[in-house]
Image (cartoon, rainbow, N blue to C red; front, side, top):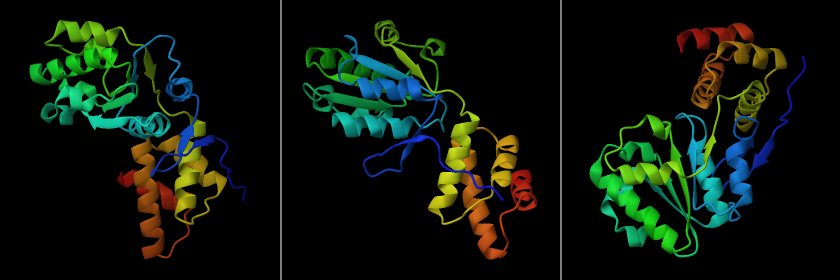
Length: 224
């Protein structure tokens, strides 16, 4: 049977898996490629769901810019002047987790202001569109909404296929094209579902000594 090759571009991450570039995430990737020439913008906000690959993008950006990487929850215990490097870049993931917490909002606002003084580029990620959040600090909302937004959209077929083939290959498993096509049509369209299915298929195929076929995959998907 026909086997599917990997057709998408790979971006190597420092100490991480390769990142697959596709139309659904190219907008964010292009901002990373453009760094530090961001058309006069101080920062960028990347929006995508929990399994969209925002963390991979953060590390991809960090690899290129040598940026520090923080989660929003970590900045509470840090002095903003210690967080922000001078003439460099800074990543803060999941900034939506701090919105509604006045202390965290104030810290983030100070970080942005200090970064502007230090000529430091900012790379923020969020799982929620910022306009839908209930800010305590209006000045922070205004500042964040002034940044351009790069949206990571639901994975398309090409990306899902590439993720499946790549993750199976990493486990030394060759899967026929008809199996991949079946999975694409029946699985939830996100990276976490792909990861779970591949891990489960690998485990069961070894323990049950069975080939990964459509009936085999169908059983796993029905249990997900």
